[in-house]
Image (cartoon, rainbow over all chains, first blue to last red; front, side, top):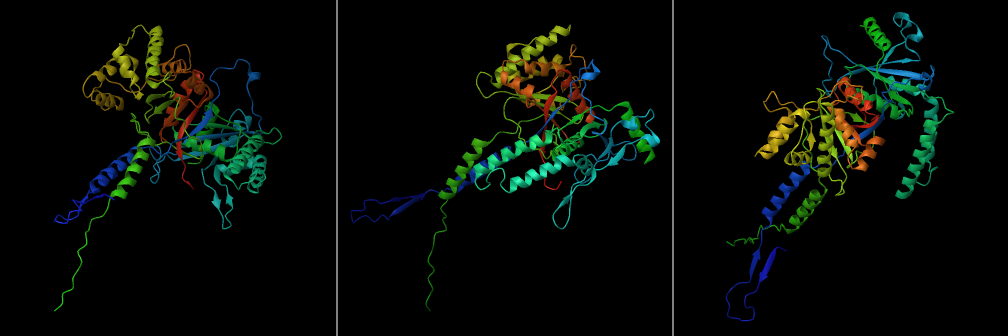
Length: 256
Length: 241
């Protein structure tokens, strides 16, 4: 390919010149191209980062208390995030993945069951953990830790979502054979799932996420992830109140 | 004794085809690449199950380092009318105007300084030092000096990096971070303003080990100026994590 056949005076018999080939060596060219490719490969960002949408309540003081959205006592679940401390007062950092180790606490309903003194017996704060699903031999995952607690509170919605998933897999939202069909079925499923998550008829929890100042930002994202995994539609990030701090310190003092 | 004759064969390998392939690959990478922009702080974003991709245009990135310092990057429309350079020059004017309204020590920028600002990627020095910072662009090696300043690596104790931010819930006395964010909404680029309103226009990028306190301060600042919706930049979560 990279050669040009030269035929000098082919017609005249006297010429002693051989048929000559001019070959162009492309090896340096390839070398250079490889270098350039390597450079571009290393300098590009192929993976775009993901985003997580959140909306926070307005900072403005609401004058009229009646206008404030109130969660009913039985629906409310408060999750408090804290960082584990090493001896001394440094935050504990996992030696494997380099993340700050977070601890998660939760309580149902009102803090301290609504009593004046939220410490001791009245302290309804409980501790949990971030754990991934345990998968048994049959391949059925079982939720553990904080995920299990959220799932129990959101049973009704999750049962509906499971039904929708089965329907989707059986082709109930449209055929899954073609690419076009799959996209349409996916869109129909998403729409139906959204409706279920927001349904008024199902009992669903209202989750309030709070965090101590020393807890890590990664932990907050982890909690927000749990909301998405467990199809929670109503949740918000809020500030720690004084009662929350009192309960947390009380709990940590008792379980040292 | 008969000798076995070994035919001499050329060891020449034809590289033309190989060259064709590499050129094609090279073209592909050149056309699809978006360069990693240099940022004043390197952060590891937290992993998340969220699948949504970050958008390419019309958003403001708020970079927060583990110490709570803040830098901004403005990404504008691809159209000529609202190009990054035009909008950034307008942004600087707007911020200076707002700043002068509340401060006795007025600031003013020359055309050269504005031009230098419009070419910046990430920015974030106190407004009182912005003039001095932008003047660096005129020097040879100016870009390196500016990068060093932003990363806090030049050995001048007077040079401060990061946009001044504090706990402030009074909208009438905005801090510099709030001034910048408010000005972002007020440029001619209506697309950016709309995105900021629906929450996809403000992206917070922070390290996973940053204390919540620091992020909370940034969020609280945004809430004060009625930017209640925003997005957090995350990395893809590995399976089983």
